[in-house]
Length: 95
Image (tube, rainbow, N blue to C red; front, side, top):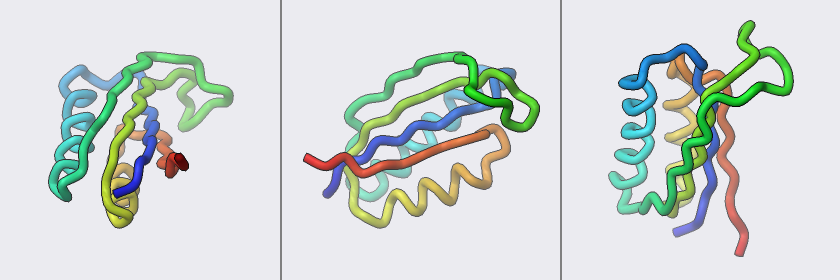
């Protein structure tokens, strides 16, 4: 099991239920492979460094989790096809 950090940015105008749905989806995917979500830090709406899809703000969420090496690929695939996610990044945390 390795430690990972995921940050994703949602469109700023999405409803609360969509925000919770994406958050729960990530958590379910981690737990489905016997991983563990260690921390979820919601940053809320922040200004973007440059416009993305004509948005100047985004809703940021940071997730720290432990999982096997195959899970980040699956999370990446799911976030790519989600129309409400405008950017995301998963990095391995070296200890």
